[in-house]
Amino acid sequence: MIRLVYHPAGHDEDLRVALVELRAGRWKAAAELLRRTGPRWALRTSRTQILAVAAARSDVIGAWRAEEPRSYDAQLMSARVAVERALRAHRKQHPQTPELETSARHEVWLAAHRAPHDPVPWVCLLALAQIDTRQMLPEHRLEPSEPMLPHGPWGLLDQVNQRDPYNREAYHRVLQFLLARDFRPAPSLAEVVDYGQWAVARHPVGSPLLLLPAYVQVEQRRRSRADLLWRQQWDRETSLDQTLTAFHDWFCKTEARERSVADLNLLAFTLWAGFRYVEAAEVFEAMGPYAAREPWASVRDGNCAPDPGEALLQRARGESLSYARRQRAGPQP
Image (cartoon, rainbow, N blue to C red):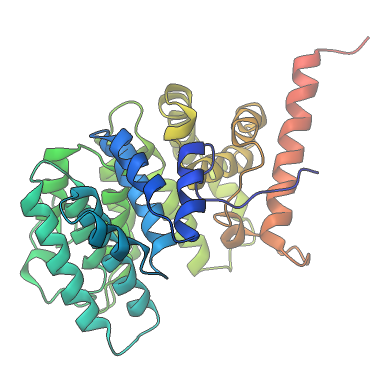
């Protein structure tokens, strides 16, 4: 049984180093990382998001801005951290949430005006949209281009698409927005399912958005634990076709550092749950020791272990790798 490592950087060693330095109050490694990342938008989006989560509990980014006031990367990270703090306050129902949200929006707009070509500020605006659970702001209740979709922040998503088509975080932020809506009658989860299907129908080869319908299915499972035949949903033809498409058109066509730990764990789960052990073994081997709590914690199957999510992950990993080894060995005499 492998000892699992829960670390958001996964195989991105440069990001790992920057995170260590950032948590120690040193920002120069993060600055160098973002300088080298440049306009590789998918990588820039994911790296700034992970760095912001680590930096939100300290003033390390403030120190960076004070020392390099002309640095756009420092300004962008300041906006990222402000957004992360506003979201945390919202999740905790903190009374200062409105003030933090207003401050974050101000920081984001400053970054957006300074670098109109960068999609990250627009991703930040999509992240903040989930705080507006009743869709009070006009930009959060625009009519969609597709009749199957509900009103939402489609203009913001279009702004991201103009700069970085099919940006992973942007589409996931819209998913979070749709799930967070709070009004009566209660929004239908079917609308979220439709959104996942709409997004995957537009995918380019190599996009992790091929996994978006699977994220929706996990959310369905999390909200209703009454399905005793939970694994069968992943063996259905439509689900399995989408899983195999994600395996062949995303996993097999991207570099290791471009794959998030979360996406790898979800793909490994869906392949294993769909009884595609050989493909699941490939994903587990690519994951190495790196693991994520989800989807395992949400789809656990009644195991009574101290950590049932991790127990399910270890089970799935063991079954997949064992089956793949037997297949590679061929028939025994």
